[in-house]
Length: 458
Image 1 (cartoon, rainbow, N blue to C red):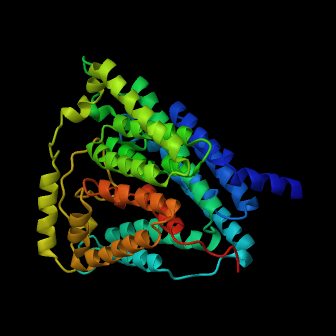
Image 2 (cartoon, one colour):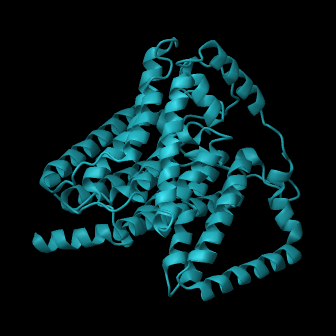
Image 3 (cartoon, rainbow, N blue to C red):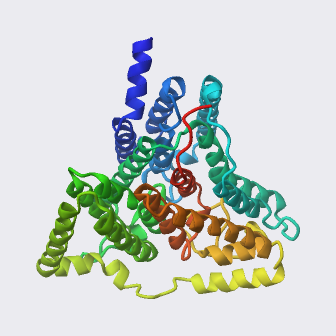
């Protein structure tokens, strides 16, 4: 048993574990084996619950599990009955969630004496303020009180609940941060691979090889969700390109591949803010790289190869990018949503109307019943749903993250982690990503690990 525990702990803390998680999700998503993938991830989670020394093994599992939902089985993007329309699926989901929570409780009981000391940092208070805004949405003025409360609670748990959990069982250290960055990279490459498979199988094209944007869909999300998630994950490879003295070129190429995934997503917002994130990563690499010579040579080579590809393959590249060129600067219905949100804010300016009480009309494929429609802009969303009070609490959170960025500006790890948060925040100015649960997990992890190191135990 001691040998088994030692080997299990080594596997869970090694880079093989995030690779295994990403590979499992990719294969099961591609084959439509969603249930099999969920079972494997649950078993891998229990390996951690029983043998891990901390909660780092949950990072890749929690970030990748949403990507299991395949195009074949997704009820959102299929008009015919699918796996998730079967009556036994909610039961299986409930059992899986129950088993996961039981395992988490077992881990907490096993490691409770080694839990890290509680520290109420400014980031904790800032995140708590943001979550308070979410919980208060439409409390005094909205009609759908229970729905508003449950939605605010679900998103708050994704942010604050996860932050508090890992603050007791995930030490801030170089090893933990690099594990998280590698997990981000593994998930990003897995999503990029899913996109490549989709382009070869389910994405539709016009006669001139122009992708049909509405067909750029993975089972777990459409183009905007895919692109924003990749933009959030994009800084990870550039962290390694900056800190690795021996192989910065390898990580740089992987970063370019992830940015290529953003291009394939067809999301204009993700491309706009992903390109900004990409440029900021290049600047950080240029000035902070430990192997500056090799890094700058890589930048030069990629620029030359990009110019050569543009010269030789410009027709196919422009056809591929036509998904952006055809839409140009069209608002795609956002202006109407923003107008409705502003009118809702004027009707309930103090505490907001509530997420489910804003009369938004959103065209969608299939029925969306679990989550409210949003106005595709964080500022207007918070003003309309939570009022001035909620928006003020969110601003307090933003001020704290800016202060953290200034305080940790000399740390490459903290800078790249906060750049990841910035990418999500920027993408959310044109979409609703900040109110999705799975980016919220990454957000909480990045915010926690961006703070200064903590003691290893009591």
